[in-house]
Image (cartoon, rainbow, N blue to C red; front, side, top):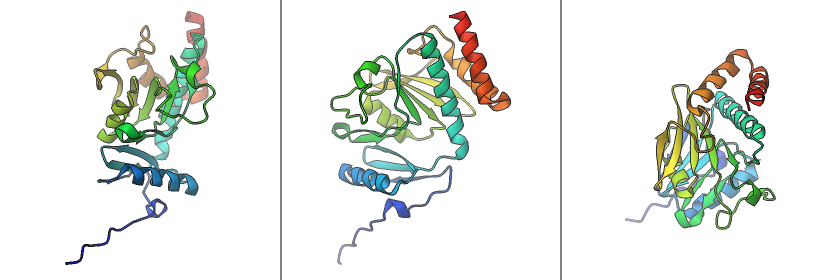
Length: 219
């Protein structure tokens, strides 16, 4: 029997409904990089995570965008009030061939390592450090956390409507923590869900302005 010819489908032909995910197994590193190049050329908005030969392509819901943007703004306010340097690298594609992993955070920050990447337009993890803090909304994928572990991102915040978690890299694995290493003296676990909820109820700009005034006064 003649072996079946592998079917190749261009990523631009994969149409996902908002909020849906497709998982593809046995994807090589070379295929993953080719998919990234094709996506960049076609300006497709789908998000990608890759780990251990498993590729996930995700189409975020429009509502997915708001929480992590609000949380990112909160982080900037706190860092500014504390007069700490930061660089916002958004949903940059991070990849590490040696570990065969790649992902795109909803948003991420360099804080401790801000001075090392301030002039970078692209991150090369063979010479650059990973982000210090990554923020995700509605992560249900083990592939994403596996990739974060392999990239050695020290802290990952995950927000869902049901729960907010602080995940700290400890001995190569993420452990849920009640405190944030980035803001050890602040009740981040309670603060973030409270502010996000208020932003939806009262308006993001109003809540963020009031929060900046509050923390500036108390600092």
